[in-house]
Image (cartoon, rainbow, N blue to C red; front, side, top):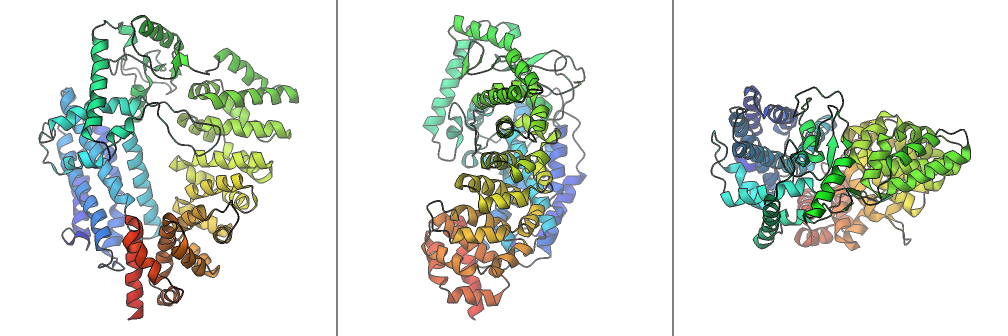
Length: 611
């Protein structure tokens, strides 16, 4: 078995030990419970691996050992951590709490990394278990977002350190100091500024992530730490008004928000408090009736003025206490009221203005949602006026860029209306409907809802018959939806394989071979998809790409061929006759790590088939 040391049975016993560890009753109670639950999701995976024989242990030894070693290390570290964290009292020092929190960060990163590199093609893993693995991985990814980014080169050693009651005392002080100096800026100083259409990617006003990337050197990190330290010293020389300090972080607030009890906090810190499962106001301990966070523009303006007077640098993107291009709340409320006007022209003009505002800034997206626009905009998606419908779907797309609005849009029952626009709207409206579905499907739980709404056949139709931009929007949405195993069968039944195979042979300047191969590589572990791909006579096209195309496409072609040909001697002989051996040998030497792994596995299968 992988690693040759720790067997699946041993790891199953380890998971049993983890489950039997008494739950923490202190400050890390939720962290312990969440980690235990995520580890439990791996039980069925290990049972199937225990009962499965790897396709080829020789060809896959390197890749198998890598992911298996990560999984073993992650589970062993999880047991040590859970055994230690349960002794963490509520009155523990901040330093000890930070150390335990960092260890949760390390374990989460290690387990997610293991599942990310899980070689599905080596085992008989069922779709049901695959869904459980994807669920566990998505939960680990969300936890990583709350804990923050982790540099694998600098911090992975923390996993192997022996843990003691006071945390992990053997971790180098220098690393810990650098992490604490930079992490808060990295995790909280980012402000999303996204545009009208995909790709929807998170950006930052300052490239802090680079300082913790795998390529960062110590000098750059030191510069970042020193910069933060200098700014902190500058602030310390002044007496900051107590009302300007966040009650949670005790730091000068940059984005103050009001919670249901009327108390004001820094948005990032109160959001983290809520995300950790706390239901009360940190300051008053009163139960929060709702989790709405209302921007405190008055306080933000006062803080901005105070910073200007004392020559303190303000957060990037803010002028006079509010974001550039931010709309006035009274104006936005008036526009939202006009959305319900009896006049078609009035509604058309109002939704056009809201589209313009929603494109400009995150603040506007927050204000528009708080003004109650989302349910009204969803109703306008079925408008018979073409311009109104086009602007309404674009508004919903822009609003969905802000993470908290995704839930409001889903709660308003928007998916059915979005699918209707996708089926019967103008081409521009259909393109933006596809982009909206992609944006909403970034939340894993929404993939299931969207997949069951009839969206996939409409997206496949746009993939076949849309404009170049529409095809790309459809491909992006379909790829994201097909990550969820339950949607793969729906996509196959909707005819996605036929559409993708046509794209492989497209010779126009708008060819989308890259997108087609990426989606096929996701679908290829589904039995119905395999049958459809083979039936479409795709093997010659894949061999052609393997021989001549760019590295990324050759890698995906090899991955698809491996999924199609394992346990099928006839197909292996067929791709051998089509000329797969030479390009596979080249890929095994000159490809990416994934490409090399796929090529080596295929070559070994071909060798056995010839024997």
